[in-house]
Structures are given as C-alpha cells and as structure tokens.
Length: 154
Image 1: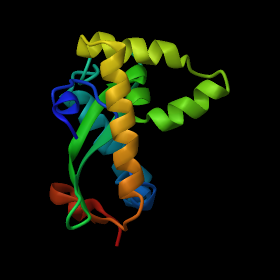
Image 2: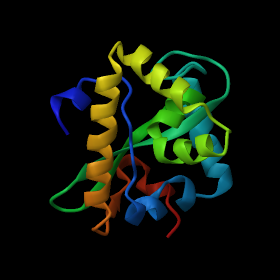
Image 3: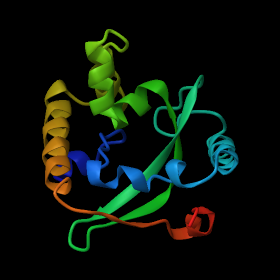
Image 4: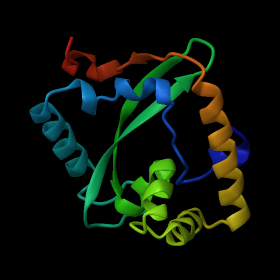
C-alpha cells in the first residue's frame, strides 16, 4: 500500500476470498469465540478501538499478509463500532447499501471524519485496497494464528 493508507487511523481491510475460511471465528467453538470477544471488548473498555464510539461492537480480527510466502498472520483483535466495522468490511457494506440497509455516503463521511481527510483520500484507499484484494485472491493463504494457535480446532 502507499503512504496514504499506512498513515490512516481507519483503513479498509479486505480478506482475500481464498483466506476467509482461516478466520478465528470459523475455527474455534462458539464458547471460545464468545470469550475472545468478551476479552476484546474489555480490553477496549467497551468502546471502538479506532474512533472511541460506544454502543454495539464487533470483535474484528487483525491480520497481516505476507505477499511473498502467502501467509496471513493474526496480530490480535480490536473492538469496532458498527461504522468502523462496515468500513473494514466495505465490500459487504456495499452489498448492504444496495439493499438499503446501510447508508454508504455516511460510511464515507465516517472514514473522512475519523481520518481527518478528504473524499479523495477515501477514494485512493478504496481503489488501492480493492486492487490488492484482487491480486491476493489469486493465491491460497496459509494462516499463522500466532499466540492464538492453541485455540484453533484441529
């Protein structure tokens, strides 16, 4: 990514289609996920870890991608408000917006407000992230769950 996306407080995260089955949530029991989620919310004092909003939160998995070894490494979890979570999962948010469930314009405004940036910065992040997403979809990804490996169902 460019310097534009590196310095953003809130950025778009798109998990390659070929890596979606590697999510922690899909690979632990429901009870384990509930414990991870509760600990995550406690860590962030029941507020969004990006914008500080309260209310309904989501536990978001934070992954890094090594484009040489095609390894995705879990770095941990962050509590996100609905708006920040929708930005992270903007492809799904777009589908929901098309159905009238989400106001896509308000999500863009949230992105710009959190990052104190222009619409042009949003557009750059959006298009660069989708370009990287398309490239990453061509590969199979090996998950590295790091400190959470012991929780994963074998």
